[in-house]
Amino acid sequence: MKLLRVGPAGAERPALLDGDGTLRDLSALVDDVDGSLLADASTLDRIRAAVGAGVLPALDATGLRIGPPVGRIGKVVCIGLNYHGHAAETGAATPAEPVVFLKSADTVVGPDDTVLVPRRSTKTDWEVELAIVIGRTARYLETDEQALAHVAGYAVAHDVSEREFQIERGGTWDKGKNCETFNPLGPWLVTTDEVPDPQSLALRLWVNGELKQDGNTSDQIFGVAEVVRYVSQFMTLYPGDIINTGTPAGVAMGQPEPKPYLRAGDVVELEIEGLGRQRQELKDA
Image (spheres, rainbow, N blue to C red):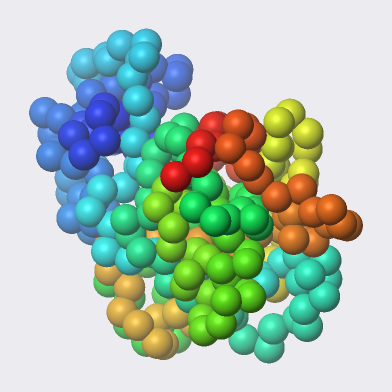
């Protein structure tokens, strides 16, 4: 299934994109697409049955904003330097273990919402990423099979980053990762039954129409199952939590001088095979 949330920010309603590309209203069945739904197998089965029966009302998508596909996100866990190509372009050694950091859930916005360039920013960068959406509470998982069984689905994420704040201002990466609007998510949460192999997905990103990133999740250093298993050793993952799994080569930081960092007026478009497409216009904060 392709689950999503539509409507004004803070007042989104649950919806589904059916196999014919028609937007369907889920609000008669569920209050929201959130952790409580993702952990409720019986309700998910009722949604599937309603889709099969053709009883879900259609929604007019004209002018309708698409919000983040998951509501009430508890936390966003991020994996850094998780593609061989990206590590190489930044001159970083291949990590022996996943590099883990956190983004605040309030950085999450819709896939086509405006991204704000922070005040005094000189190095705002792009990063297309595969996002894992957790569907079952995960603690101390032992195997890849267990890890994948705790995944509800996948989505497109844009891990926007301010590199000066992240790297040159001291401390941890948090200052460069948690600026407002720095995590567009969606358009859809695609359930795992529609993503048979998360390690074989093409990822692409364009800036002002120019292709900048053209990668594949097969280049990940630590795959989806290993990431979920690993993170569960250090924190409890709850339904509705998000894990951004890193970005392929092609970010601004890895390009020759003068590096083409983002500015107000730029347009970023990104997509992952089977998971949908995003488009953001940048403005000054």
